Every structure is written in C-alpha cells, then in structure tokens.
Amino acid sequence: MEVIIRPNEDAASLLVARIIARELRARPQLVLGLATGRTMERVYGHLVRMHRDEGLDFSLCRTFNLDEYIGLAPDDPRSYRHYMNHHLFDRVNIDRRNTHLPNGLAADLGAECRHYEDLIRDCGGIDLQLLGIGRSGHIGFNEPLSALRSRTRDKALTPETIAQNAPMFGGDAASVPRRAMTMGVGTILESGRCLVLATGLEKAAIVAQAVEGPITSSITASALQLHPRCTVVVDEAAATGLKGTDYYRWIFENEPEWAEFRR
Image (cartoon, rainbow, N blue to C red; front, side, top):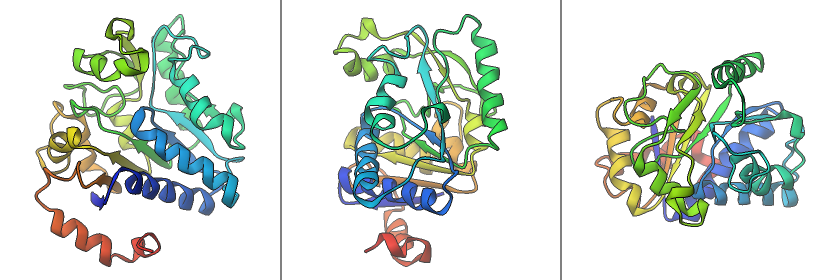
C-alpha cells in the first residue's frame, strides 16, 4: 500500500483524477470501478474538464459502480445511477451501455447480485477501482463485520452510514433507504488496482486505522492492506492521524512512478 499526502482536498482530488486519466489514456478499454459521494464529486469534475479541454476519451471504457440503494429507480435523483449520470456520464463521451450499476429495483436481489458478478467477470475483471472510506471504515456498503471474502450482495446499512448519507436526501435520515446492494470486499480485492481518496479531518482517525492498524472485518477498508497495488490519496487534514507521514512523503518525492505528478 502506498499513501500520498496532498496539501488540500482539491489537490488530492486532482491527483486521483490524473491517475485515472493516465490509466485511461494508456488503456482506452479500461474497466473502471467507480464510487459515489461528496468526496468523489471533485474527481469527476476534474475528469469532465480533462475530457473537455484535453480530449480525454471515455468512448471505449466500461464502468462498474460499487453500489446502489435498494428501492430507488434509476431516474430517482437520489439514486447512484442518477448521481453518476449527473456528475460524469452525461458530461463525457462514454457509451451508456457500458456503464453498470446494480439494479436496486430487481425482483430477485440474489439473482441480480450474481448477475453483477458475472458481468464483471465477463469484462475480464475491474482494472482500476476508485474507492472512498466511510466514517465507520466501510468501502462500498461493506459495513463493519462484512466478510473479507464477500461478493456482491444486499446489505443493511448502519445508523452511522444512514446519518452520513442523509445530506443527499435533503438532510432527512428517515428518507435514506435502509438497504443497498454492494460489491463485496472480495470483489473489490480482485481489482487490478485500488485507488482510495479520503479528505477532511473527520476521516483522519478511520484512515489511520485502515492504513496502519490491524486487518479486521470491523474496518473493512483495512482489507486493502492485502491488495498488491493499492494507492491511498489523502489531504493534510485526513493525514493527521498517520504515524508514517515522513516516509509517505519521501516515497512520493522519490519513486519514479510519481515523477509526472510532482510537476
């Protein structure tokens, strides 16, 4: 696992967008795993700008989102499909048929989850998975005590997650669905590369536990320590709980892989 510390939220988001853009330019048929939430909006804003100003091409890539609420239609403005359309898909030249999210209205949720896993496998797996970290340490909607080998499935959301997501529902926690479909921890760990973005002081403690603490199902993001190629990008605020900051800064300043991003 590599940790990169940037001065502020926008610098961290820009670096994540630049990493995605580099991978996409090198591999136009990239299979990209995507995340939602307020942290990701800046990333998608930068990618849209790169598409508009630099010709970043999304026409051949395929995408799989981490999760979707159960019970929300795709055109519901609170659904993650609507979120992705609004923040990215409608603003770049991606083929909508190549964008995938779980169907939160499926009559048979188990069959839908198996179908989602099949789609990922049929595309050859996810090449680059973008992730955030929830305040309880969850990735996707893999709440605490999710099995580290879990697959795409439906999950009950914790009160903490419901409260965290309430701003997307007008601040009304009672309006947040109680269940969602999510890629499993095992599904995420099979991605070719994981790219994590966490910003803000409120994420500092959980980032430190996920990155430097023990691997535990109580903090599902800690399972990313097992991934052979995981990069965690944080801003200064989110890095305040980390013990190895001097080493992380040294690596970023000296590893050849990051030379183009230091400019």
